[in-house]
Amino acid sequence: MLIEEIMIKEVTTLSPSNTVKDALQTMHHKKIRHIPILSTEGMVIGIVTDRDLKEIVPSSISEIIDHSVYDTALADVMTTNLIIGHPMDFVEEAAVIFYDNKIGALPIVSNNQLVGIITETDLLYKYIELTGAHQPGSQIEVRVPNVPGILFEVSKVFHEQKTNVLSVLVYPDKESDATKILVIRINSMNPLSIIQGLKDSGFEVLWPNVPGVVL
Amino acid sequence: MKKEATFIFSEEQLGYSFSDTHPFNQKRILLSLDLLKKSGAIQDSDIVPPRMATDDELLLAHDSKFIDIVKKAGKGELHEDVSDIYGIGTDDTPIFPNMHEASAMLVGGTLTAVDEVMEGRSKYALNLGGGLHHGFHGRASGFCVYNDSSVAIKYMQEKYGARVLYIDTDAHHGDGVQWSFYDDPSVCTLSIHETGRYLFPGTGNITERGNGTGYGTSFNFPIDAFTEDESFLSVYKAAITEVTEFFKPDVILTQNGADAHYFDPLTHLYGTMAIYKEIPRIAREIADQYCNGRWIAVGGGGYDIWRVVPRAWAHIWLAMTTDSAPTGPLPADWLTAWQEQSPVPLIPTWEDPNPLYEPIPRKAEITEKNEQMLSRALHMIRNEKMNK
Image (cartoon, rainbow over all chains, first blue to last red; front, side, top):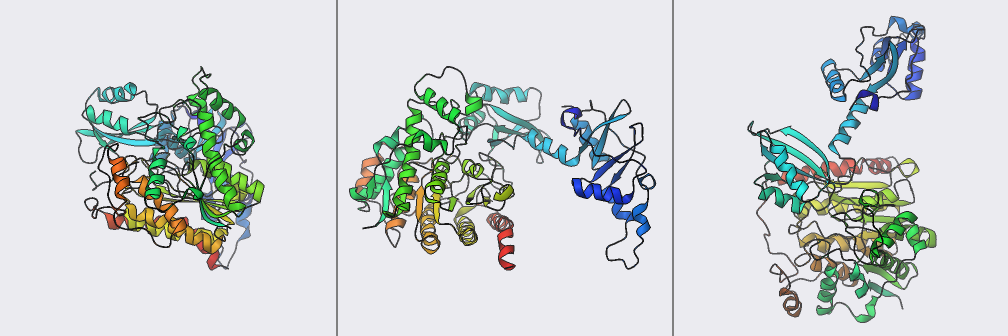
């Protein structure tokens, strides 16, 4: 899936001449934590986060309050060495960028113009969708040998029983490198015949998978 | 004279039947009623036949297009695959002859139960044919076509102006009823169920608390696989007591799925008959204390129809009509009448054998996790109580 399919296209932005006060108010009203800063030509030249602002505004319990801070231009406080993404990046790549750089939002730039933004929250929701956990279904976990062609063998069982699979995830098996755990969500309240089919094909079914408890 | 309790039943309720091999099997109702009859616990005069819900009544909680599709499907006039849109014709909820009439009969049974209680003819009423809690506004799901509880709650709101508390102890989340009233502050839904981590439908997290003005009137208590009796009952008692005190309902509607038992093939909660003895007795206490006794009970899931459901469901009627729960052997003529048909040996006593299964490792941790879940789920109303 491409970033352009999930990014927010109506982006709230400010200019470098706006003040810290403007940014604080905008974040408060729009309930956002990241504001890209645009030049008059529409290029992204920086980003201001709620964390940047918390570092520079006086503490609410401080005795000396310097009000001039609030009038500081954003040009002086914004982060300029930006990490940006492209609308045609893969969602998976974006997730790695977030993780590696410990950032909370990624401005999406095309043709030197800001075209969107995605945040950690948007990505997390996409991952929830990937797991299929947002629609009614049952979850089955299967321990399979880590060899080529095994997914085909497993999916044959679902094909034979005409069961609609909502999602498939592959996890490493903590107990052994020789096996993997397939996490499969199916669109059914009654997974018993699927479980039997998987067992008949020689797979170990974990339903439910509670470490230390053997059914 | 006002009756203590009314049992809704007629053979027509057995028409809700997908196939001989489908886990949802209404023979459970016959087995339960026969157990009560042979125990001498029910008279013919206690039984009232259900009526069929009208289209207007179904429309209280369902989409007209969906109802039309179900009607067509039941008459064999549906030629396209609508499983993606309307949820019927799936492995879970296959099409069967006259499925509209059969489904509307189950809804009508719950409405009959409602009228018996709300019009004061009976203190309590039981419709074991109801409890189809997965039915959605425009879509069948998880063995359920029409949602009798959703229709009945709307019906109680419109006809009697009642404030309803819905309590769901089925091992699966009561999603259909929850979503029907998710925005409505005058209906409170409470569901205790095995966590959706593995089990259908997957929803029922404690964070699902309602929406808009209905925020704070949806309660979920997802308990872990291998919860067992003590932890189940301790969560149930705390949840039902504190939520009733908070919401102050006029009437309670309980959904009594009997699928949290060790023998149930679809779930992993490892309950025993002890929970089914207690659940309805606590519900009755709550109804007596807070709702002038007004209590309507419906059935629900329950997929070991021989060893679990008859005893569990008989306990509901016995909680409505007797002060102490039965103990000791089941009537011998009930056992002989049904043993031949049963693929498994029937349990000959009201109690389960003790122990029923090998002890579960990690019991202390599972209990602790459930306690933590309970306090997070009740956090808001406990706070509100402290600040009063």
